Image 1 (cartoon, helix red, strand yellow):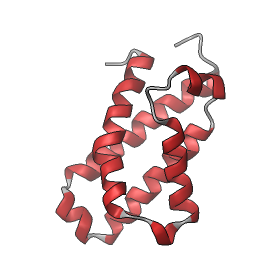
Image 2: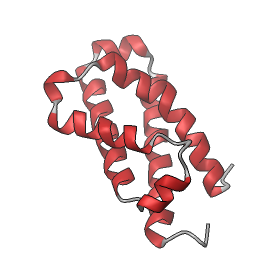
Image 3: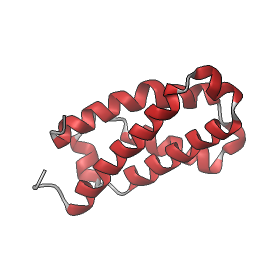
Image 4: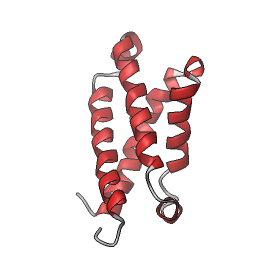
Length: 114
């Protein structure tokens, strides 16, 4: 990890922290999520933070790790931030419950953290 730029070394653990928060949100269950506006708003905030963090990664790092859907993470942030009336909470749930854990695993591999 020492050969990474400092900003990248800071952002990747942040992404894992956000993934941990998402895991705790998802652990409450889909029914709780579907019936609790606060959980849905929290999910939006997490995806916004994830997209912002990804935006801080250098393009060459993003290009070197195409197995992580970096651009989709940024696009989701843009949707949450700018197209809030079009949010599909089933897609948001899937992002948090399925796609983010898979991406977090790859990020752990990149960082060699287990």
